[in-house]
Each structure stands twice: as structure tokens, then as C-alpha cells.
Amino acid sequence: YAEQPEILKYIEHVATTLELRQHYRFNTRVKSAAFDEMRNLWTIDTEPGDQVTARFLIMATGCLSKPNWPAIDGIEDFRGDQFHTGLWPHEGVNFSGKRVAVIGTGSTAIQSIPKIAEQANQLFVFQRTANHCVPAHNGPRDPQAESAYKARYAEMRETARHSLSGDVVPEDYLTIMDLDDDALERELDRAWAQGGFYTQYPYTDLMTSPEANERVAAYSRNYIRSRVKDDRIAELLCARGHPFGAKRLCADSFYFETFNEAHVHLVDLQTTPIRAIDARGVATSERHYEVDAIVFATGFDAMTGALSAVDIRGRDGASLRDAWRDGPVNYLGLGIAGFPNLFTVTGPGSPSVLTNMVSPIEQHVEWIDDCLIWMEQRGASRIEATGEAQAKWVDYVNQSADATLFPKANSWYVGANIPGKARVFMPYVNGFNVYRDECDAVADDGYAGFEVT
Image 1 (tube, helix red, strand yellow):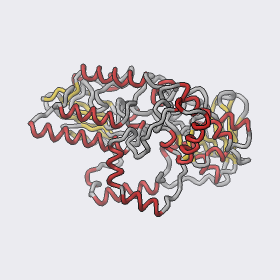
Image 2 (cartoon, rainbow, N blue to C red; image 1 turned 180 degrees about the vertical axis):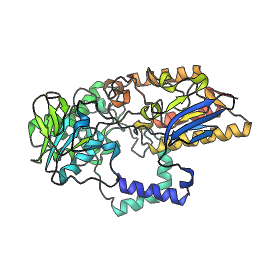
Image 3 (tube, rainbow, N blue to C red; image 1 turned 120 degrees about the vertical axis):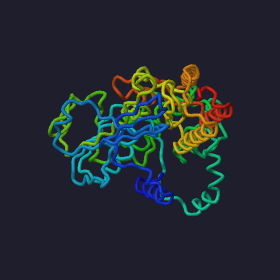
């Protein structure tokens, strides 16, 4: 996995090489967007006050881009430093010699806690729910392996575009329940030695069979026990109460070993919940923790949060927030009935967060681009998903999810981390390759399910 500086360097290289900066407006926040039915135009209002009109509005706002701040009494009273892992300062943070609280134990916490522990004098980790976690095995790539990878780059990218996960992972599938205990342990030893996606995608029954899933979950818990010296802490770090993989799997680099350090303390919020934050720290039902800094690793309003943050108005002034009040609805994860000439990139109803995100982003952008070219060639000015096609797609996505274990967890996949958000499983579960074929079939059939005028 590339770290932030390397990713930023690559993005800057692409922006410079392709001369993209001229097309961007930085330091600009979109407040609202309204469709003008007479002119078939979207009007977009921004801060600091500019207005833009466009024939098409493509919301490429990201699935995990609206940070979620917890509603904890007194949060504004804290006099120390406060950070959110989704809004990390560009200049970085130095925790040397400080007492630090981290609230949350999801992906961003698991990535940041080992790094914070290297600097902090005392680190208090406040955990409400333990999460299944697999090893990242992150580090410099072997030069020979990297050369071999680059030699096959075009081939591997093409494979990823037509794979279940949108990535290059082995697809010689195994059925967990066909393996005896010894064979399964050998298989999972191999998978954990590779880490990442390799622990989830080769198994046909992992996300459909509770028995198969529990066998892998038990292995995952034993993996944690083998790395944490204190038995009590190890058990608190073991995920229970939700299937393995039903929440997006976290990938760790020495996360569990961090709790072997004497200055790192795990606070179990199931038994001692947070009551308030005050000027000096965090108060639970049991004691007060005085700290110099608080890091909120409390996740995001996923899939829909960034879209709902914009006041989007379609035909007859219909509000997208109202249309999605009971959960997001759309067609192909791309178009929304009542909102002409509006497209979403990797939104709800698409594979997005269940895959390697780059592949579905590319597929969405290419599909939308082809659609706009097709419209231009035919002199069409307006495209909108039909209500019938949307309803069928939503039913299909929901029924597909209900046939799996994914909805069995209180995850951000269902909006469970956001108070008041409708509980609906949002991603598409049937695989990126199947989804791509379905989108292509719609396009090949003259964009069936869309009304084009």
C-alpha cells in the first residue's frame, strides 16, 4: 500500500503531465445545484459565491469524504488539540511527549495508532466495537518482484477491469465448508501470509454461510491472541457479534502488537462508556482521562454523506435529500429518477467500496463519457433514469445483499454509524465483473432504463 506522500506525488505528477489544474477550482465548496427544466441546465452555487451552469452534473464526491464527528457532550470545551483522521493537517502532527486519546478503532484508527504510539508519552485507545483485521504486510516491494509486476502491468490492469474484486487476486475459488480443519488452517495460514484481499476473495461461501464465516472468524481471533501478550486485552480486541468481512476489513501493520507497549492503554467502552469531554480530557462512567490531544477516528457518513451535504434539486424542485430520506435509490448506481443529466460516480447501488476503488471509478467515468458521446451523436440533450428501472434496480441490489451476510453487521455499509440515518445496505454485492457486464448491456441496448430526449 502506498502511503499518503507517495499517492500525493503521483496525483501531482498526473495533474502536471495532463495539464489538469486549469480545469479545477480549488478552495471552492459546492452549496447547491438545481436543474432548470426549461433550459436543461444545472445551476451550481458555490462558496465563496460563484455560480456555474452546466448541461451535465457528475457528482464524483467520494464514498468516504464526509467525516463524522461524534455527538459527545462537551466536545467543544476541550482545550487541547483535536484532530479527525479524515481531516489530517497537511503539515502533519507531532505527538512527542504528549498524552493522547484516540476515539474509535476502525480503519483509520488501526492505521494511525501504531504511528501515534511511537511518539506519545501515553496513549489511550477508546474502543466501542472490535473489528476484524487482517495483516497488510506493508513495506518496500522486492525490486525483482516490482520489475516482474511492471513487465505485466497492462495485462494485470486488464485482468483487474474484469475481475470480481476489481483487483488482481487469485480466483481459483475454494469452498470453506469443503475443507477439514487442518486443510482450512493451512489455507488460512497461506492467506494471512499474503494479507489484504487474499484473506477474503478466494472463498465462495465466506459471505453466504454463517458456519463457514465463523470458522474464518475463529482463525482471525486466534491470530490476534497470538500477537497480544495480555489475555484480557487480546479478548477485548477480538471481534464478535458480526460476521467476518461484513464490515469492511481493516488491514493492520503492527496494530495488535502496539497494545503490548506499557504506555498504550485500551479502554472498553462497552463496560465504561464515554460520558463527556471536558477542558482537560475524556470522562467515562468509570474514570477521567487527562490528555493533551484527542484524535477522533470516528469514520465517515459513507456513500451518501457528501451528496446529501449539497442541496441538490431536480425536476419540480425535488430534493435529493428528501428522495433519499428512507435510503438511497438510483439506477445502476449512476442515474437517479427525477434528476435529469445527473450522474454519480461510485455511489450507492454500485460495487465501489467492496472492490479496489480505482477500477469502478474508471468504469463509471468511462461509462458516463461514452453515454455523453452517444447523446451528442444523436443530438439528445437530456437523460434520466426511469422510475420503473430504478425500482427494479433497487430491489435487485437489496435482494442480492439479503442473500449474503453483509447486512448482518451494524456497519457504515448500512449507515449504522450515523444517528438517524436510514438503515439500508448501500453497496452492490454481486461483483465488479458482473456489474460491469450489466452496465455494458444497458448501454448496448440504447441505454435501456433511461429516458433520453
